Length: 375
Image (cartoon, rainbow, N blue to C red; front, side):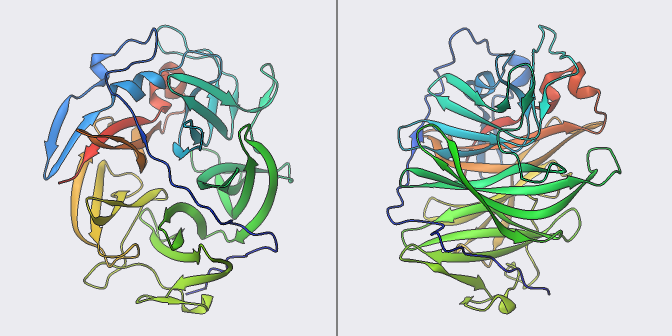
């Protein structure tokens, strides 16, 4: 297997003083003026050993009619030191959504940031309201960025950006991956401070998920292996950010040539979607992923370490939107957003193979928000 080579630059990618923040949302608090659409809510359901409930608060919070973000996919989130939450999205709409949820054919950009301050939402994008551009734009005009995972260290946000280019094939998959870059933003204004190459590969994406402990920051990557992908892991120590260690199947090695995919207990490679999450919940490590890129099931595995081996695969939630041209993908956990009774927030993206569906009903291109509580 060709080794993935992470590049650590002379400037320190991470700095001492990692602080983990936890935010808690009161589900009975809905944004001012928002109405709960009962047709969009599924109520409380139990699937296996998981209790799930659609989040009315976040469903309404992202039911935007204009003045910024009105649709997108990706839905990463980063808790900020002052209590705000940074949400980042890939391809996004910045337009008016009419009362019947239709939208005009304009204002589509490749990435946006949305700052949540309680029930207040502020969208960050480039250009002007009349001629908007993506918030983060690469140096090559033929390339574009989608956001990946990130974290806060000190007074900066470190975020991985997926660099892509169009391949001329058209359709929802008419793009080619170039690799991952690392962007650094200043706080509190999220101004871009630096943007550097991190890894170059059309088959491997680094930084799609991060997991932090008191000793290490784990940086996960996916390797293209069809609709379901292999998962690679590397880590840096919070005390020595210049040295990257690579998961070799049993432990960590300083040599990238020893890189191996994470596995199940039976030795086969664990398969994940492009976006997936590893987190600690209830004293156990969990891996949450959509079953494959087009699958409706959101599955959770259990492990004894942040790199597995993974076992006890269970379906936590089945996405009800998947039917006809509509598909769901890239479920992601947000362990810093929790409810004492309902668990942690999980998002997934909704899209359509028919691009016109996104204009006929804006809800066809908005993330869904579900509370998931494992046993």
